[in-house]
Length: 278
Image (cartoon, rainbow, N blue to C red; front, side, top):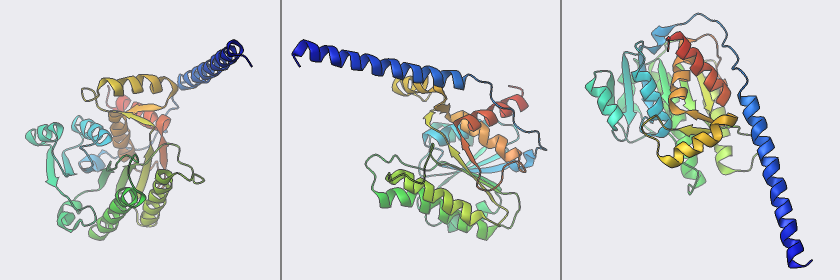
């Protein structure tokens, strides 16, 4: 094959791939434009929102959860357990709504037992990127940290209707050989198993791309969001927070072991906004 013919073949192939990608993208846009399914009507229990705890509020997802909780009048006290303070945490402390506790050992929660005995709702957003992380470290943070927390939380309170909601990962498959996928699956199974029969609900959120809260995102993050959002592969961190608040109030609707994908997160966020008249 001479050079001009080769170049023409490459151009034809590239054009075909681009057209195929565009068609798949447009199909995703069409599917994403379909109206969100309504959330089932169920009695609400906003008392479960009175005192909550957030772990990982310094990260992308956790900051959005904290922002949503600060804006909810039903949430009176937010216990933020963190390694470091952020401007949003400090603003919440100044407003009298956030009680910040500095904590460094996430395999030992004995210093928090008094606090945890008062809390019925926990939002967990602790995590690291898999890029450059070894399996032992990644597993410790994503499995061992929350598992040890659940064990200790269950040991200090017998309250019914407790909820532990945590950020898992998108579209994880048990057949995957990828390290972080295996560990995310292990995390879900471990946490669901610990809660089984205890009266505690553990609910996993499986978002794709998460955009930081408004005002926190840089240009690259905004571009990623604008690309993925039209096909339903992105949510805002505040949407996750709103969905968590709504799920907490709908105590009888989701059982232990429930998982919420991007579309489900958006559904519960929309239900929350409608309930709050926003």
